[in-house]
Image (tube, rainbow, N blue to C red; front, side):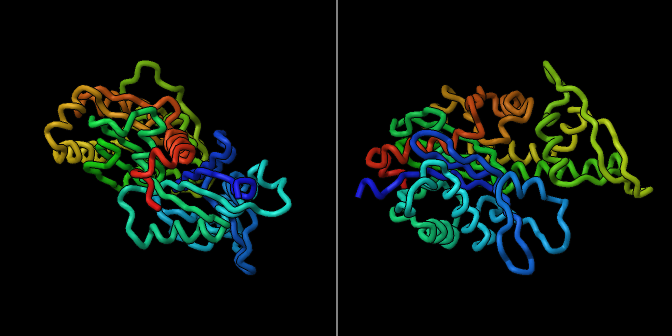
Length: 339
């Protein structure tokens, strides 16, 4: 059967979907689908659909099939997964579609029903063997932590829809906390701030761009980014206008959300068994996910927790890398994978 089976690892994220095949990230695309309203057909997915976001007319709608890390639109998510798998260069040269062995990562606070939705989506795109893995676990493997050891490690994975906080030991999650404050909430914080402070109405894509270019959670930075010009619609006159914005303003905009992430981390620490707390005092906290790229976040969390904070070297791909490693060593990680 080996010839007819292909192995892929998928990180189904709220913001981005990544797929690993033959140890390489072959797909890295925004989780967004553009649909024709009259026929219900998918017009575009990924980068192409992302370009359309906020610029569509009434016959086209853009949908984000995943909300808060779980499948919200079953049909759109299935079509998106299907198209992305078909876009893998080595698979689309085949005459027939091979059966797939997949490892897909899921948030740690997911329910049985949501789990079944992910599994069914995978089976419909020819997934013969489907394994699921919890995101913090995949992130830990991707960062390079030996999760089998009787030693506590704390992972904070700030994604698009959820922030997953987990204490991992002996290849299991000892205590975890999943909150719905993450990249999407940061984006809407920026939209609200621009509206209230500058009377400027901006779209999601612009807010996302601001977050990437000048995003920061501390007003004092060692090497701050340059100020950025932002264009949008003036709410008073209705005319298009441009304002300049710097990292300090974004730090103010994101402050409330970051405080909630800090509180969740403190809560997870307060539930940690004492022996593991002693380990975490020595090993510190690992940050993964796109949110880990916010400037000054490591410093701020370090001040709050009095612990060393390590940012994964490529935080956006830590989870999918871990999922890929679990896929290669399915026997070794049997205990972590959910069949």
